[in-house]
Image (cartoon, rainbow, N blue to C red; front, top):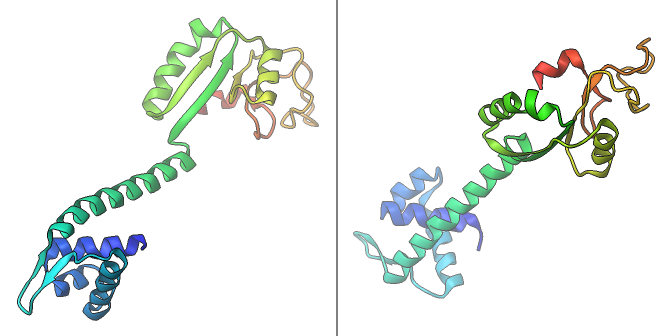
Length: 191
């Protein structure tokens, strides 16, 4: 049994007419009838009582219809959730920052993130010095580091600044794993 059988059965059960159900499913009526017969054979139970003039649900068909609708709704929700997670619209994001940012930066950032990304849960660690944030990024315990603008021991892997004549100390303020180095301060407003 596959989801196609469930969708076919739900259409026939809701229409109580094979021709209308076939139209709704954009298919011919004979293959639809065959699929419903296969489903009933697989289940070993009659779901529909058929006469030459009408189609009616059996008691087993009524129960199966309710369950099939729930299964299809769950499958649709699961697919939707997966797409949301893949797009970054839902999930969890852990941010690290220095203690002073909890008073100046985090209140506004928290409000803005909750408005712009309502499906994402955020956790903030406001007790981290710059080197601790870099280590936490590398270790995977935080997802984003909010660094001070002039961090004197910036990671040497900051490829955005390398070879640009940028003098030490690095002026980067935000970093995350997989980013092309740190994000320059001028880009901070877009984050």
